[in-house]
Amino acid sequence: MSILNPSGRAPTLGDVTEFDCTMRDDIWEWARENADAIAAHWAEAKAAKPALFNGRVLIASDVGIEKSRLVSSHIETDYAALTYWRALGFPRADAFNLFGSGVVVTSDGAVLLGRMSAHTANAGFVYFPCGTPDLEDVKDGSVDIDGSILRELEEETGLSGEHLVLSPQRWISWDGPLFCCARRLDARLTAEEVRSICRARIAFDAKSELEDVVLVRSVDELAGLNVPAYTAALVGDVLGD
Image (cartoon, rainbow, N blue to C red; front, top):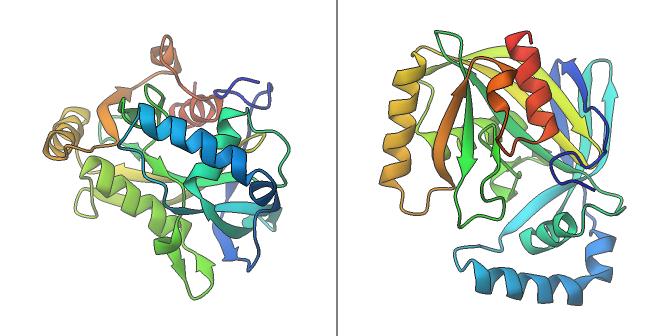
């Protein structure tokens, strides 16, 4: 199973009106059953990449679409469990790796992607700025995916509300266990202006998750890059390719 396309099929792409995500007071049974293997894998990963951090993250235990709304429930787990599940090729685990992605479109029509740094678990992959939801995104029992998108985008690229216009356009791009919740963000800036802000942010942060940004105007420009299938599908939809 390819990590770039875990289902082996074209991702399911669709429009949604909102992300309705809630917390569930439960444990991830698969992680409990594999606790020893997860610990051993994390020790190896940490030895190879000391900058890795085993924080608490959220995975989705149930996902569905109801009247054009994405509806999901989430449980808390370790990042180590998520990375081990991924390393195994996402075996059946009654879970989805559901996350938010910011689809930034510049004023001159380019789409922003980020290339992950060597010290990260996804080194070399190119995809939308994103992040696995964590406890910081939980508010009154709900998981704020829209808020997570904006927070991760600013942390990784330096782009904030002053640079962006929030679009009501939201998508889901579903590829087996990967469930990307994406929102369009229209930049008030050109591609080169966006690139300049992002590179300044990356240079400022010694622990930046991104090593660089990539701005594309065609799906053809993704050739030769380690781009997940769910990302390529979204890029094609945004650019009309």
